[in-house]
Amino acid sequence: MLLEQYKHAIEASNIVSKTDVYGIITFVNEEFCNISGYTQEELIGANHNIVRHPDVPEENFVKLWDVICRKKTYTNTVKNLAKDGSTFYVNTTITPILDENDEIVEYIAIRYDVTSQMELKFKLEAKEKELEDLNKKLEEKVILKTKEIEDLNIVFHQARLASMGQMIANIAHQWRQPLTSLNLALFNIKKEAKKGNIDIVEAMYNNTKNTIKNMSETLENFTDFFKPNKIKTKFSVKNSINESISLLGKTILDEHISIKTNIEDAKLTGVSNELTQVFINLIQNSKDAFISNKISNRIILLTIKQDNNILIIDFKDNAGGITTDIIESIFEPYFTTKHQYQGTGLGLFMSKMICEQSFDGNISVNSQDNTTVFRIELPIKE
Image 1 (tube, rainbow, N blue to C red):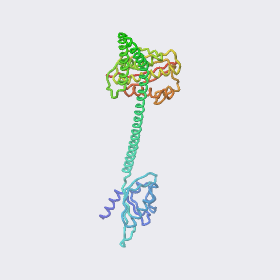
Image 2 (image 1 turned 90 degrees about the vertical axis):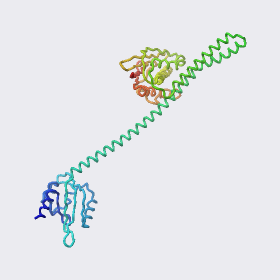
Image 3 (image 1 turned 45 degrees about the vertical axis):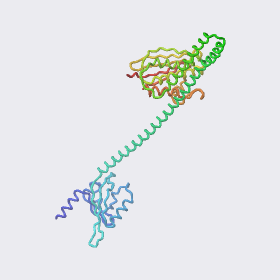
Image 4 (image 1 turned 180 degrees about the horizontal axis):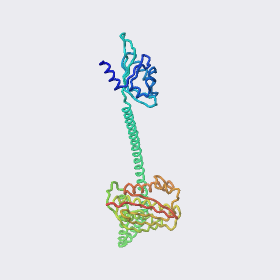
């Protein structure tokens, strides 16, 4: 009687089946029918592989039979297929039943349903895989962005070197005439000294000193301009524009360029030399366009106005305009329409980087009716 109660308790709380030594079902309890969807009549006499899931590898069943045929207990979590095509998972324990001669007479399998736990496990694994893929993509993006930043830094450094080369050319151009004047002055000083004209020698000497002083100031402006690690300070935008015009003074004069300004002076916080570099690049571009397009009346108009906390700088020239097929590309590094010996294609790229990275602003371009307007918008920060 007590044994019957144990048997009832096991069958009521577990999924139970029995097979003969060939795997033919001889008994199933109600729980087995409920989870598999088959009736007892359909199961009794059928092979136990009636609930085998096609996804389960054949070698799993080879291992199962190897264990139980050696009179050992087999335990595993098994994926099964119900009658309606749904999948269920059961933790399975299969035990051989032996007779008095120690021979296997049947097998009893006791299972309990773990479908919900397995589904949660698979969902968790899927989320972990998704997270792993996301981390991998993020790592790839970080590597890609790091490479992009490194490439930009290299290009920016090249742009600085190219700008330095342009500035050296400007210094050489601006020194050529005063050096000629100094050479002539020394000759005249020597000639007048021989004649004993001390007053004339004194006057020539003073003029020579002024020439040397101006050359020295030009050189100091050049070295200050490229001084590294300059601290951000509040500076006058008008002074920055005037500095760019001064540094290119000889070129502007020789090329007969008229620069007109309508400036509502304002102050920005940053490195003034960097903004000066932007104006130098724009003036250089206009100069090259004037020459390339054979413009005789060469005018650059610089206007500055303030709109709330945004400083708007318009740089306009009448150098012939920019064609629609290239205007979208002019801020790209190494893009140039000039001969390779005339330009590197880095000036406007460098100007864009300065406006965006150093001043948190932007630079755009509009060209029509043979005129071009570069608009620089920079936030005014306290």
